[in-house]
Length: 342
Image (cartoon, rainbow, N blue to C red; front, top):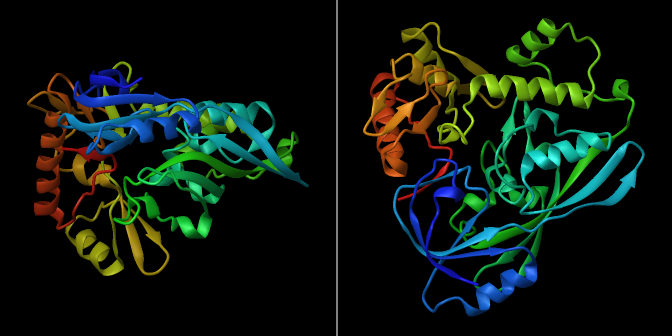
């Protein structure tokens, strides 16, 4: 059943109280098709997972389709490898825990990332040296206007840093991802697994715990510990996680900034590019802990913008001020990571 003038405050982690003209939660592909068939004439659609990567700065004059399809199935196996198909409405972290419980490896570094599986390929989520595309096999999606089903493989998804084909004009907002197939490593012998531990925070945590032999469970626990230390719980302090992408610039551009700011934090990439640490850029401009109009930069992490009473619009307004200061100081544009509905 469609719900009219539905308050979205509990459906987005920034806790914006924006209203959806229509709201429909679907738990199967059949329900999705039914909703599309009878939606009000002339009303557009907006697909919503757990709302962890969207900021509602205004009401949504559309039908909000909330994906809650559940299910995780093993669809194939080979020596040391397992393929799993996961429904789009499954919460990402619950998938990580499910895989670890069964002795599968690959998702540990992506522990505690908020959101649903259906949203993961759109953003090509990533953390601590691992991206979704590293594990991705294929996805199934339904076109909103026609009900057509498509299957896309890794190459067709055109993955890049926080990017996929679903962020291009031809695909953006047109499809509902109903399932994702991932390729994981299968073994209960921790020595057979390889783990991404190159990040300084991971190495420091491993050293602090005197861990010399890793397992998927331990690796996940390390990542959870780091994330909880750095990022506020949206159930306690409304936020959308890291608000800005780390900007990617040319080596020459990186050198120009470094000459002016010798302590610049950056990471060399292939192809003559460098990734700048957006949090460092913001922190150096003394934004950490500042509150403006009901939104605040988190006290411990400059990349996190929180709603402290002003709602989504206040968060977006604060982000624009930060963007302006970063552009003035470094000549670099900070691109927001969440989708902004203005």
